[in-house]
Figure (tube, rainbow, N blue to C red):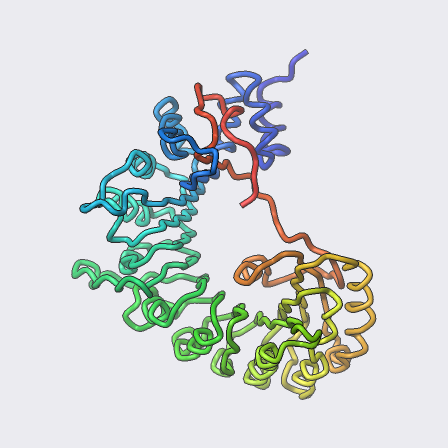
Length: 456
């Protein structure tokens, strides 16, 4: 005897809403379940412009295929909560820029009403001025959606940052735009009178000094006086420039994550002005030279962590410190000067609120990590970091395999569980509907035929 529809809906809602593969299978059984599963299947959409080697000339792009689906089922945009667009302007040499079929399809998609859209991630591999005018207008209009909470801007050169003034409800901004090879557009007169957007969470990925000034400076459309989380990945030279902007968020910033690239060692970053800081993340590198010794250029980057922690207020209210160490092999973990790091916490009245030291070791090799991790985190560290042990600070540790610079800051949470050592996989799978140019043309609106689950 078949189950009642309400019971089947309840099972899907409680147990299968995050399982994209199961949803596609269930939606192929009947129209009733297909209509119910559609709101979960089309929550997250990824449209990638990349052409694989097997791509056939004249084949439809992912955006074109998805546009045809929307033409068949106009209710799909109502379910979309997340869109990830990677667009490569193939007609960028045309003067003026021409509207390709793919760009026209993106304009069609982004101009649909999407009342549930809360996260937009868009990467355009071209100068903003080289994008067709119609596509620029549609993207600008989408950025002004009142329900948009999370925005990721990547690989766009010369993006008109003043557009961000109109994002009144933005909760998180991930900024990867580049101004090095394209001048920053002038501020439109119509936007000067608008208030600056207040963004609680800001992630800056490999910014140059001009980008830092445009995003954090006084003329920026972003008001960082209410910023409580700042994540930064970049060169040592640029991370040293962050201190000049701390005065704007000194009272509000509670979480600071600094992932320094392996190229240069930064100067000491003064943190004494950050009176509300609760969580800080710092990184260092240990790389072996050809002689088997620690490379000399790694020593300043390791010392930078210690010197930066010494600039914190005393006493301070920091509750958690995350230390990320990038190494070639797990057995190099003991090469870091853990005694010097422990000496930072020797003052009696300086770190009264510290509860957790979270150590994440990112290594290229996972060989024998279980045994090495047990010996290092449970035997070596407790006997080496005596000051922290005396203060009752929990020392948590784990290995991450094949995690590159610039990604670990997004994975670390401000609060962690009561674990001492864990071997953590590098990749996390999300249920996102990924549409690529190599997928077959979809003959009908059957979600089971659209795509397969993939990781982002």
